[in-house]
View 1 (tube, one colour):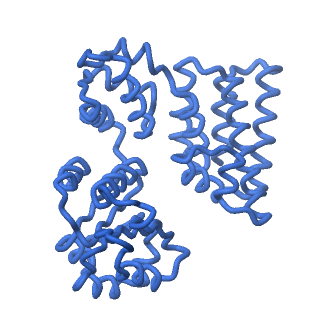
View 2 (spheres, rainbow, N blue to C red):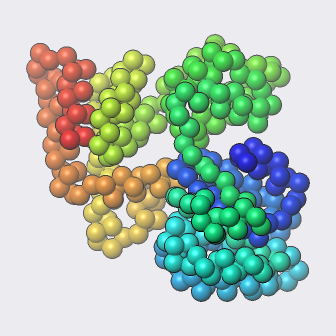
Length: 330
């Protein structure tokens, strides 16, 4: 079952005692969670019926107590969501299996995991009584097709060439592609089909995305991907000085986040002070974890060195930037 089939099933009002969403595509995770909340909690006050936990921090007994506790007042449904649930599943596999043999009729359990072994007894049981959905990142060659399918969500069609142009300009972040499709659908008004001219007029290159993805690739030490993103930024006319300043800005934010966490701050406080966009928060803190403060200090020094050379040496700025990215990844 894919995400669109899942939404169709949920829109029919069917109830399930358990949902498992797993994978590395946050946009799909967000989509299926939103669908579950909208349908399970339809006409219900979510402040009463929605309980959300972090599986790495909450004792398992609390979660099962919530599942078995009847909702307050006249509320008939309760939704218990466990984010980062890999550790919770690993420690409580047999308990979850026992619970699913006689689940609470008033509650649905949602497990959001990074990985999910379909070969296990628990996975077989989940597929028997509930639903599991893999939310995996799309390959680059699949993105234009996804754009064409997703455009129908906004009651529009998009040509194959326009879909490819949108991906070329906006990149592979599905949340951003979705926002551009929403913007394009409003821009078109009554017109039904999005073409290349519409994409050129309204989208262009998403510079915030590209610098974030560039630092993400650097944080993962993926030099091939980082150079590809850099090439895309340069091809679409991004100024080399601006690229350096944007990289420096992101490195400073990561460095500041590292310091705040070391001094006892939490992720919510850090995200608020540094104005981290909520959708990117998880990936931002993943970047923070990949660096030491010493790494970030060295990277900042490399950026300053490249900035000086770009203004004083005879080397091409593209070569300097490629060398910078290579050294940052190394």
